[in-house]
Image 1 (cartoon, rainbow, N blue to C red):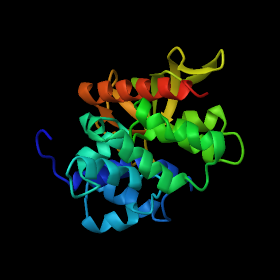
Image 2: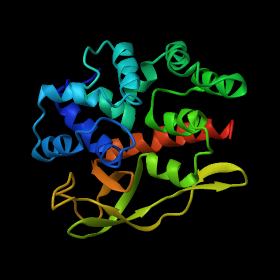
Image 3: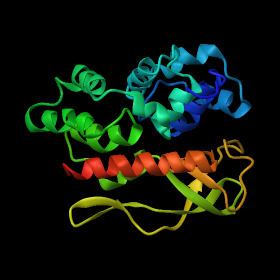
Image 4: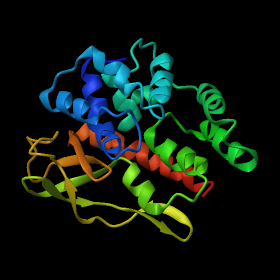
Length: 246
């Protein structure tokens, strides 16, 4: 498994990525302010775990990753990183395990062709990764067609910092676009992303030239080179898988 990581730090890592959709009311419970306060202060209270368990879309994937790697805590930092950013733990998850989990969770909601399309993705290389859920599960569960804007906001993207403002960052970021019926990343362009609320956020130490991860228009954290490489690799992998059934 590599070097051991403080398991409690996974709680804070999860909040950094889950905060903004929770704040916007899309997932999780109604404790966004409390979660934000703990993450900003760096207080990894174990009592946060039951609150994070209300992220019912993400947590079953964490449990799948943890079980496949013999890790007892689904909020272990390595597990959390695997789901949001990607790492070697994903390689350990068997296709049959993910297929079974997907069928148990979504089998009644997905029928016919849509069900078959989702369940055949694990044998093709899908892993319990956030972008897989966004592109291959979430958009099939919705009664209405999921817009490009929703998928674009929901995926974890990355941008290089051009300038730092009190409440925002201007970053160069590649958008998700549709071209000739397929999804791909377009040319990078300057965008403004939020980095603080009421003067607080998760990227206080950011500098021009740094890379940051972005979720729902919010700067989640500064990425070091290995984590940036993981995010790029696993995003490209699942984007290609999604295109097989777009």
